[in-house]
Image (cartoon, rainbow, N blue to C red; front, side, top):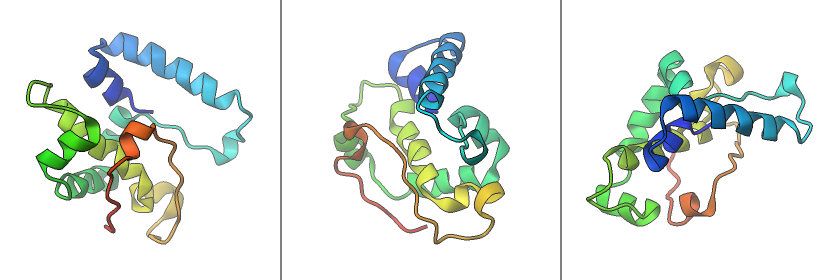
Length: 128
């Protein structure tokens, strides 16, 4: 769950973010996903718990320059600097090594991450 984005992009307090995130999780689970085969996490909590996730975020931060980030996310110099950062956090789940507790050392696992159209247009996929 992109709780970091909610806070950065919408200027919400952490309490508001937590409330919205919980509601979003309920919405996702209401479609009938099997809880034993579903891993839902928040970016802010998982990045603290998983060094591999953080390492992938750092690698992704080196793949796209600031001008490209501006075009991809529609941000400008007047926006908070966090807006330039959170995209890499949202891209990291696309890489199986971000989830060693699920996939171990395997890096050949395909991944489907639902994303809004504004976050996919112009994105360049990279191999880490």
